Image 1 (cartoon, rainbow, N blue to C red):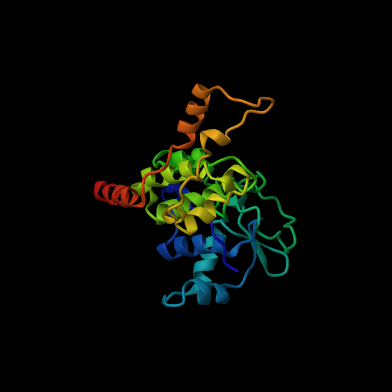
Image 2: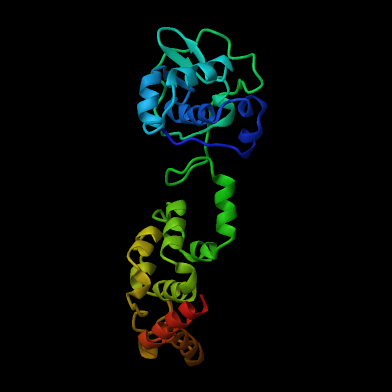
Amino acid sequence: MARIRTIKPEFFTSEDIVTLSLTGRLLYIALWCEADREGRMVWKPTTFKLRYMPGDNCDIQKVCQEIVDKRLVVLYGDGYAYIPSFLSHQHINPRESASQLPEPIASRSGTSRVGTRSARVSDVQVGREGKGKERKDEYASHRFLEFWESWPTNERKQDKGKCFEKWVSKGCEAIIALILSDISVKKQTQKWLGGFIESPLVYLNNDRWEDGVCPDAPQSISTITVPGRKDIDPALAKVIADDLKATAPSAEIREKMKLLSGARA
């Protein structure tokens, strides 16, 4: 089963790689996908040809031997092989299955690319591999964090990575003013005040900023009460009433805001 693997820019200038044929380099990269999380695989050159080079006219046995001769892959046991440097250069998805193949008895040392560290588990969210720092940089280049920070903290505020991907795919950057305004309005509704707040991912998936929700109707001054008091100071009542009367922009204004945001984008 093929897996997602990482390739570093310095790979292409590494001494032991530049001496390989072009076909050898390509097959070597393909073998990373073939290897399990420990860098082990069943050694089947014919299968490699069918799986990774089905349209190439090459002698797969010769190419495989070239890689073995360079000790980039080491054969062991009854038809097994492992990549000595694998654990030093790959970020492993924590959900990847454990190796089902026997551990090599031979030492994994002896070449410049051999690694001795255990497999590194990536700092993943939503299934992406080893991109913790890069993801933070991506956040910084967008206004997504404004959306995320404006969302009320609750048990449904999860899947930040998936939310960011959805934010980008839907082009939310262009309508962030509309989205933030909608969130501000929803914070004043009895539903949200009561704790019934959907997850941000559901909000983005369903374009909930288009719901046209308005704050719940404010209480009249005559119905405003203060715990422990029968009457309330009229000046204080007016302040409270004015605060409750604050409403979101009308649907017409919201639509114009959306159009203007799109034009600036």
